[in-house]
Image 1: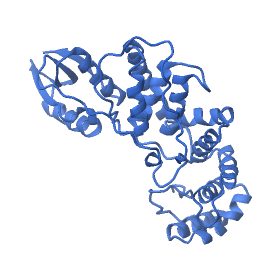
Image 2: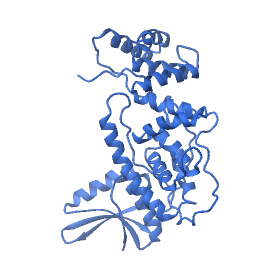
Image 3: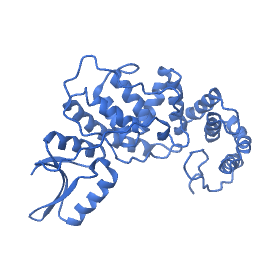
Image 4: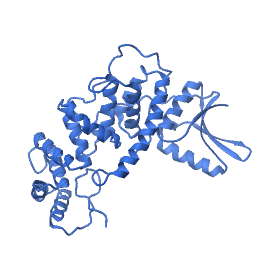
Length: 338
């Protein structure tokens, strides 16, 4: 029987299986009360198990103190309970505790928590670390790692990461960005392995694969003192889990992809002996990668092989930029001239 979910995860279903142990029943009863909007009863149910070391109850109390439901809003109490749960291996508590520490300018304390979250694929932590590696302010300056982390956060739908990618494109050379895209692909595979190895706590992050970067001209050579990217934490913004963690980050609209009406360049997304597989791949990728929206798909026959291509692009650089977006989602892509 699957373990009942005893943590508050806003926007997710709270349908739970009954478990017989008394402590677990108290935590579950609190989750049920929370779902009904009876926050004070929920707090009463969680208080005892939390004091006795139950990580789910501790995380739930932290959420309640952070949101000010059933108890007065108190970030000191929230931080205390996040830490207690995180130290017991509760993954969501680890995520939120690292972000709370960072917001409170306790960056050296936050770093190990942020790094653990980022390795597991938590996009907010990847965004913060990516900005740090770009600026070199609380971690070493490493533009390849910065762009890779920001790519992963953007691919999971964090709008501010997409905005920062566009800014980074102004300074990071094309060759370094190519290395970053390859690193981002490796990071995604590593994230899956880490999540598979860890038990309990955070549900696996669902990557949309949508990178949403603008079509930009090739970057200029790296400037010696580039204008820093925006601070990763905007004053007044809430980054710890709330009703929708990504929505709590101020959204930045990305520039639209400009599709050429004619051109000799395309991107090739796959080659198949079965034409239907090529069509299915297009339907899958178009639904996952917003950058492909508006492109013309082509089924190019060569003997018994059907190649799936998309375009057209006026320049090789534009086609290459599109391939980078596609590769960041985990699909192969090569640039082809018609």
